[in-house]
Length: 85
Length: 85
Length: 149
Length: 149
Image (cartoon, rainbow over all chains, first blue to last red; front, side, top):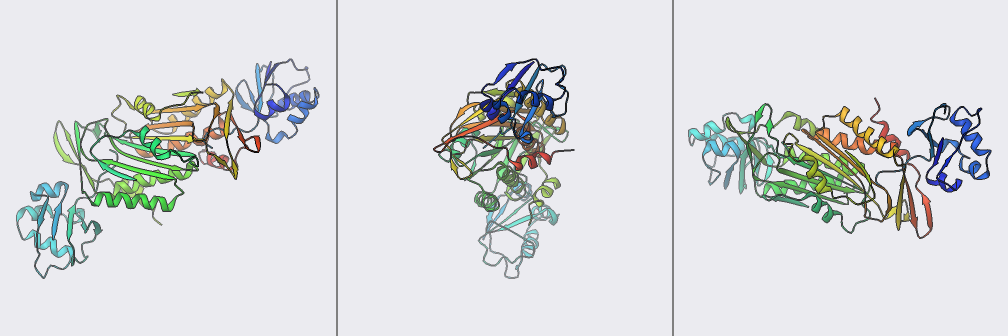
């Protein structure tokens, strides 16, 4: 699957996108974050405060306990800040 | 003083503006309307339904029982209908 | 600023002129009123707007002033046309600019609501079945009343 | 219609294109969001908007669809820019056109409120004291919540 990182998550992790096949025991979004954090300090730092992390599965907003089975694209990002200033 | 008539009042009366000096016993706007109506059928017809008549004294909205003393310009018109359609 | 004019207006140019050189503005709301080709179930060919020169300018200026007092506005503009107009033509323009969008939205609705009940304009519509003066709508009084203290 | 683009936009031309040939439209509301030179008490030199290509278009289309379902709109448009911008630059444009002004005003506020909490854009501001990512505001969540069923 394709993992995408936006805004300061992208900066902290050091990349915007990667192709990955998570372990079989990675079932939910929360599992995926745990697994990513085990891959390096950059991930651990980026995902430190999970309350401010938003996730989209196949470009639809999702929750931490949603399953990731069948996901082609999972994106992590901070709360959105578009519109006017 | 200058009397002004707008929209269908102007049409029914047959003019948009006239210079007049009302009698001394014409004290309020209502008196003025009574006096105007005595001047001809066109006025009587135009002022038939007083509930829909709006009045401005010196370009400020006024009421039927307001005094007209000192007025330089009194305008009669229907409820306004500006803005979008 | 207020303008009462027979000529058409260009909303893009008006917004640009109004906001130019003021980078503290974060949101600009504009409303354009247009002549519709239908009034109720009647088809309209042309519309003529009569107004009360002098009082119109006075009332529009007062409405704008009231909006400036009630909301934090960096700039505002009211343009109202008069004379003969056709369906699709622009009648009225209100622009409100503020640091925050809520002020700009509310002030703009306020301008239009007050304008419709306090500015001395009268519309006459002409269709295939003749001419008539447009009657004031109760819904406009209701809309204006929501801004009462 | 929705557009996500780096280029600037011309509100006058967009309104004209959107309302052309539809004389049943009586009111057109537009909102333009601009880059401010101040964020809180910090002076801003430039701003960069990052977004999530693909999801952005999907979310904007859905927000517009929702507005079309909730209000009687004859036409609507959302344009959101991305990339580097300067104070005074236009960021976002929403246009709503309806027979009656109330629909156009409410739908436009709705578009902006939902856009600010649901469209995947992120702002980064650069001032004399360095760069930072803009944090989401609670007030935007509150504004969006008022449209919940």
